[in-house]
Amino acid sequence: MKTTRFVLFAASLFFACGAFATHSEHRLHKTADQIQEQVKFVRRLIEVSSAAKKVRASEDENVKSLYRAAQDLYHNALTYIDDEKNDEAAESLFHATEMMFRAVKLVGKQQIVNANDQRLFDARMKSINALLDALERIGKEKGKTDKTDKVKSMAEAEIANAMALMRTGQPFSARKVIDNVYVEIKTAISELRTGDTLVRSLHFETKEDEYLYELDRNDTHKMLVTLLLEEKMKDPKTRARAQKFLDKAAALRKQAEEFAQQGDYEKAVETCEESTRQIVRAIRSSGFFIPG
Image 1 (spheres, helix red, strand yellow):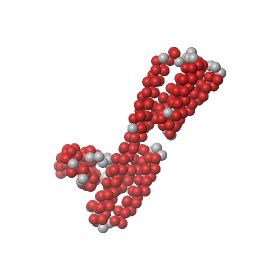
Image 2 (cartoon, one colour):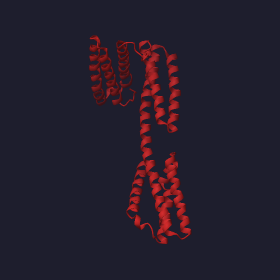
Image 3 (spheres, helix red, strand yellow):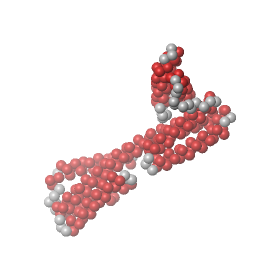
Image 4 (spheres, helix red, strand yellow):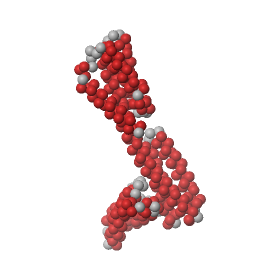
């Protein structure tokens, strides 16, 4: 509701400035009474309006500069009025309004960007929390809670770091931290499931080695479907949306295996990678963000 009121205010301010621009030739030669009314409007706009509060709350240097310019122009206008220079006062008040409108518009854009940053971060956190639940459950099943507790402690520390980065306006860095946490948890789950370390060097001696790596990666992502989507897939719409990607992934996996049997490991690698991408799309279509 607050955002809506702010948008409406910004829109009304836009039309007000439009009126100023349309009648710019009339902004001079105002009477003393007209100047006083204009002063009241600009003072409210700069000092007590909801827009002024939002502008003052912004940490953006460009917004701060525009706001300072608006304040300076307003105070210049008051000086001109004291000197009975009404034309100069009207000019300063006009530009003070213009500077304030530009600051309001910039804050509005920032709010949209910030909301999008938060949405992306929240989507990643949703995936992280689901994986942490799965990690804890598997650790208990395998009797490896000592290992999972270490991973969980590491993850919680990094999550706290990511949240701190979000609070200080560094969403890109925060997402990088969360993505690294995701990989660490996923790797730990894979090791618990298979009993082997699946992280291999990305420098392969042969295409066949690379193909075997891609098969492992594909298997890991299929495992994530089970871990992340078990509850989601109970909903028919969600299942239908994800299933089309999973069906395509299965068909591509089969093609990759056929290419490998024929000795064409280059095509096998490419096809297996595409299969994994389809699994990623299936997971994302169900509301979970995963890198890849």
